[in-house]
Length: 132
Image (cartoon, rainbow, N blue to C red; front, side):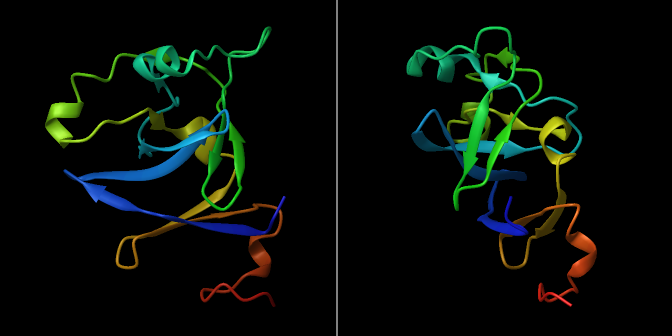
């Protein structure tokens, strides 16, 4: 695992959105929701891509731009088509606590960047991101 990865943040209709890949497809916009315990995917997305969670597992593998790969724990789906008119954009899913808890996560809204730190190495970094 790399020590940290920075990704693009988009602020849309008061939502924080980050592009993610699914099964070597995408990137697709996902809502980052620190208040969500799970990371449900839009049922429309899985149907469109013809995907199902791996046999014996409910998790789904996702890839952040820059190559960071994560696995959701739930693999739940929900229709998100009703959300799209509100944010004037399609959302392919929500990233919640089951993914965030794997990292130390820093949101920099001024720079529109989200940074995921390897928690075992996080104490080695100071605020500007340089190793001690």
